[in-house]
Length: 164
Image (cartoon, rainbow, N blue to C red):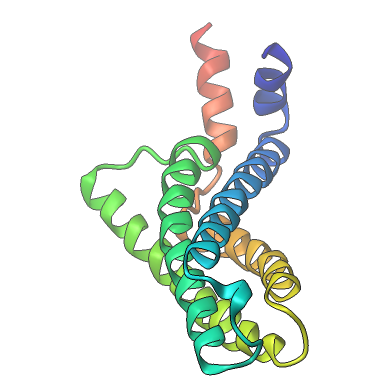
């Protein structure tokens, strides 16, 4: 635990990126677990690939998985990765920006590209490729747009050093 505190204190950007990757993996696990539960419960495996019901079931499962994983990601990113502690109005703005950026990513990657990839490969490889693209897009949006902090890690470090 002390090594984590030292990393956070000495290299806040590396700590942030590492925390983002850890919670990104957990968010991906939430997404996959929900997707697999949904596709199993709805019988995707018994459907003819590329049929209307197959695509509808895969897309519906993808949508439910997305909603639940975005909620998980928002709360973990806000608290543990970017450590946003704004007032209620700031939190509402962050939530709106977070969901909006995730919705943009979902339209671009999870709906458009996912369905294009379904034409040439199965649902699981398509989903895996989308996960990689979405993680990159989401980090950039969160880091530079949603939870942007101007020099907060350095200011926090100086404050802590001065108070001890």
